Length: 423
Image (cartoon, rainbow, N blue to C red):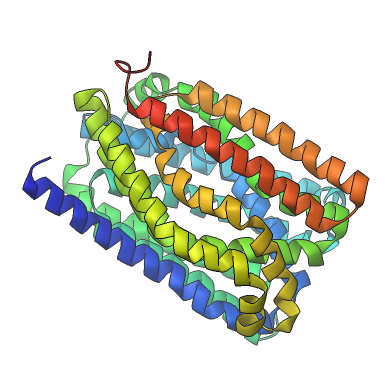
């Protein structure tokens, strides 16, 4: 890369980092207010809904949003964007029908009757997520980092504002769910119109044939990335579902709150670097057949950034949670301390795992997610049957997930070396 390209890349990093920092700082600042408006049980209901929506979000675009970065021609990428919108609309409508018919049975199966009526919001949440995901990848490809950063801030402001408002006026059970859904919907609509205003001059004619051609060209993504993504999301979010089922929504509330707090500061840098790494790695891999140097530089930077804050979290999380959020949330701090090793590895590895996408190693990703999901389920079931203690289940969850990230890091580095150096 020449000096101009390096300066542009650094500027892009800072734009995304600033936007991501603000977007994650806003809910973090609102959290002490939310913990005094909503109980751990109400956070547990929201955590369960959030986990369900995150698992379902994998199929909302058929994973075609990930392909938007790959074509050399802009028109091909645009056809993929249209394909994402089409799939999102169809699946959202199907979800609406399913929730209308089976919401009572679903709530009973989850052992959380409080969530029954709020499941009707799921199709709207999924529509917002799918639209935002597709547009985010498009703007990332077009290097519209300012728009991307602004959109993240708007989504953060919206979800936080509505959640506090509903809590303040007394909508407790489901107030967090309603606030999150409205915030995401407004942001997705705003991002759509802002993207359209920027790109309308470049929009080309779209036909079913052109969209279908791109769908077939990248058919490995729904074939492999959807199952892999489902397993990945299920592995990450099934603990909330399992904790609700085994121990009740109060325990799952502490657990989901812990994840909510750590994901905020951790993703400030990791997501920004992940977006830039994915874009730069895609370019270098296409041109040079490898991106090993870029991979190692990003790895060292993320490691240096992570050491100090995660050490503090490991040692002092219970005390920090008590001071900031109140004595009622001490147990959430305990869970945070137990999961810190996993959070540390997640911070470093998640941005770099884009190599599975860049190198088109969907099969390897699927196998990792499959064994992770099976191992995770076994660890929770065995931990519950043997000890019936939530802390033990969370420790086993942390061990399994940490091992997964280590394997993922090794394979990502191997893929970054390209075909020439694979043997």
